[in-house]
Image (cartoon, rainbow over all chains, first blue to last red; front, side, top):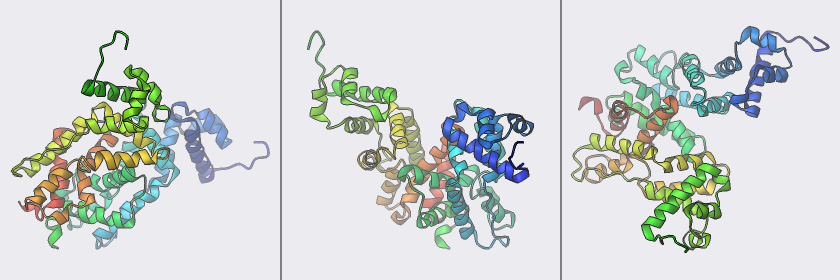
Length: 197
Length: 197
């Protein structure tokens, strides 16, 4: 191993994860190789292959490692606040390098449909499908929301409006806008009489 | 003019609009020139400059010419149907070549912020801001909806969920999904008691 300190476990994993993201930024998804990642991480290609069958699998692993899961109030006594925090978590994640990697994967859907499928089934689904969905199902489980109202469309409202705002303005929604998304779109969809509370 | 028939008015305009879209597809926004558009339209660059000060202005004009405006039922007696038709109109538009041009402009926001601003202020705003917004305001004007509920967030719900579906699946929403977007997200946001109707 020459004069280098041997890196093990989490430290090596973090270096390899960073290397795949940097390599993706530089060469793009179509030219991502184990060789390039190994060179960047200063490790052997064979040691990467022992853990990941392909550079795409390594990329998914890096994305999954950084993907957050929202944690609703255990007592389920602050639906509005928990929804706002879930959207804040989404925005925080969107600043992480893996968010750019997710965009790169989605932009190449036609060339890599199986990778997009894996992104949803192995990253987003295990993390709760959508931001706000874990919170909504938590409140349904304790009987505060009608579970029948928490449909795929309703799970999507928060993410959709945050993404739409970014597409329209090129900017993150303000805290004020996040509160409006929760008050004017998500809460009405899960309450029977939101405007009369 | 050699042996060519002189094209005037709408016929020439349609040719020039098509030429700017084709040129954009081929060379991209950064290399769009009056020269390239004129060559493709088989017309003189000077005659383009008589009408449009820049290729970007010509592009905006082509996008605006194809951008649809929804028409709510005059009697305002079918809110749900009018909302579904507004989203259908959005999907129909998304298949038009100008929809690809809009995506190209949005993707270059950092390089052409003023063009993105013009797209919103001179195309989307005059066409009613967002799909479903014209319908919602129409029903508010005749007293069937509380105008205070039709906020920018609520105007955005339909477009946001249609776009989100396309990003997640790479496909257009089915008629079933459009109806769910209207029933589960838009109507609850503008009704006091949607689930008890």
